[in-house]
Image 1: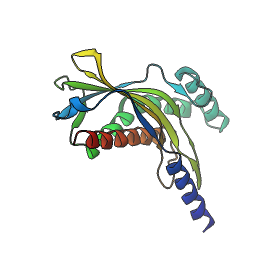
Image 2: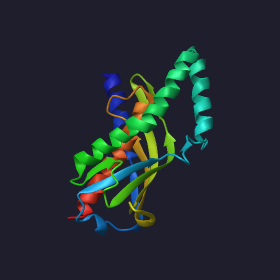
Image 3: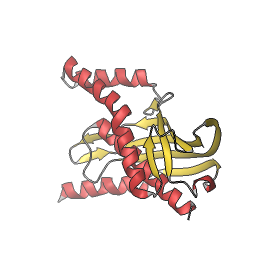
Image 4: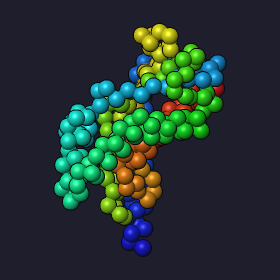
Length: 199
């Protein structure tokens, strides 16, 4: 019973300290007659944790943490491979699945035929942690930038999305999977905002 209470308490905490999404400039009018959006991810200036480490420093820290846990270099290499795969595939897939589930506008990558492109620029990530019945969600902060596909300098809408939580009610053991849930949450919140604004 005590374990159940702890899990529920953590879930409630995640809901209370949820994501904040605010329009920084522009509006949603250009999306009203659109059927599709092109998606691209930008990790070029990402920072991590309260220290605001760059990606290189974050990877070095993860390597040290893995070795401190008594694991070997093979485990380190596996984590690095998983991190690269997550950036290229898992984060993207989670974002797309959540967007397409919650809005009528179909979002996909490499769609140069789409009139508009959404760039998800990742600003900051806190990976969270998992320890059985105790867990802390990841947090993903992004800037969501809508531009003309053929003229990327034309910014039509910019949205600040802060600390989207990545977790579920029982916790996610894998750091990268937890972060992926943060991208899914970002997409869900954005999609619902789009649907509300283009009605």
